[in-house]
Length: 541
Image (cartoon, one colour):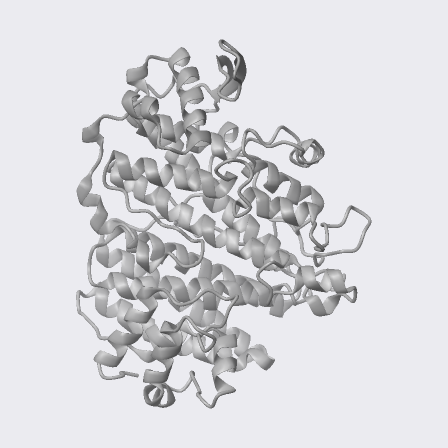
């Protein structure tokens, strides 16, 4: 059934920025009177927030992978903008923001779990609540128009000096672009009580936003229909939430949620990391995206239409079937299978409190770093067809998206998807994988070992760690190349066993010998713990 569409209603509220007594401003909020109680409002807003974060994440990833390599341009400023080894380059900034959106997505899952709701990994291309989303989802090459949409979606309400970006974003979206911060501001109202709204949080701009939104909300329906009671929170949900320390790398922040205070901290942190605490926070998504758009401090601005082409000629909203080149089609299909496995592992991780969580956490990291990321970038280097365009990863949502309720059935679904990935790899290798044959051979060995584990888990049997299944996938192709330069073959279990102490020192190091080196993100505690567990298990193959 299509989701209910929402109307936006204007309300006069106190002007928090004005020193004049009685000054007012007009703001719009969605009409949520169709959601009678605070739990209903929390559910619609959280489900929408999850879908928005997921949609933004894949759009930012697609945009990053669409960009040319620095070796494909000759101008020095253009090369600097596209240099993936630089933390300030366009692809690196987009990838960092996409990773942070993954942190937001996980935190929203925790908010759902804390209220007794199931995880939600849907995306805007499910029956949409159109009026809560910033703009229609499109996977498209990075352009000035698409970048304008991203800037405005992440902009704070008090952003100034971006009228030209607003105009371009509206033309690109075909309508006004909604700010993501509005959803989180309303969540700030719903997860607060009247006393929390009045007291604030010592974050002035955020507190002003929540107070203004609560003033508008009370004009829409009585306060008791907006604020969750204390007994709405399920403290035992923490057992199924991600351990923050296992995910918080760089600016990726994940919050556990057990009560009102932790929920409000999580909601505020997401809102501020996206928009910036004051509208001048240079670490926010808004300012980093605006920095790509405007340039400055010696950095290139994103080119106007008709200028130099920063992105490859990849399609908008691609499908595997649209790629006539057999190799590109094979890689795109394999990348989609890895995406399906990634989403399944994330949901399974959030649904279980079992000993499988450490292995699932390792598999999630491997899929993000060594599978989806590698394949998505590889596909954009392949021809789409005979017309000269480039292929791209479609990020197709799997069917079914959500896992079965039965634990054995969950493992059986993972196994079916893994077997499909094995078949896809075998087909690519048979047709000729070229320079990727070693990577695909390692992928095949890992999936075959995973398949055996999944079969055992479906039967309820435990298993130890495995190098091929759990450890080798933690190393990306670039990690293997890097360590080969110092005489360590990470693809060989015997060599990895001999070098285990050195590997552990390097992944735990914060110095110049760290693996992987900056600007790549260091290993998480969960990855390190998995490697230590493999050593403790006696280095099983």
